[in-house]
Length: 213
Figure (cartoon, rainbow, N blue to C red):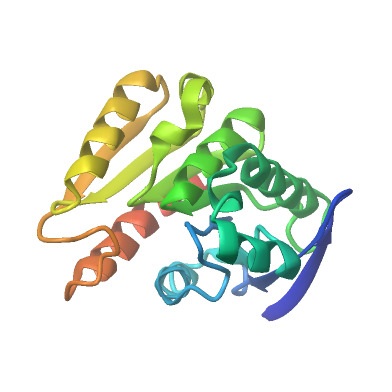
């Protein structure tokens, strides 16, 4: 089942694409990266692979159309991790009250700056978030929240993404939850090389299936 949803928050109304396979075993909320949206082809590919493994997905825009237009000019909102994490938190709360999703355990999949936002959101709602996967993420942007994350966390980085590898390994040391770093050989930041995004989807699927029970 697929449908467009609108999540009404005090300061904004956000749109998302909710996909629920029959008898979903859990649900993964996507936090896209810098300058992207819920239409990101990479995230939609990963979402499709997760759906094939019985997981529901919610791909949503973390900014309104007006905010996205402003961010295209200035680039300031895509690095506003507090704002993005609050928007994710609003979506998490919505999932907990929606009749279709209220009984499902929730995971977060964050890409680039969305990885930092996902970790902050997980730290703020430890009772609701069971697992986090970050793809080419910026966990360093989560700051002190790293030490407060309780959800099992998988940090996936490309082997050719040198600076980001270091950021993820440093973040790993600051975390105290169940966690792992996976480096995919030959992959750049966007995982555009043949087979690399498929490996991201496989690793993410294994992680979510394990921890969303």
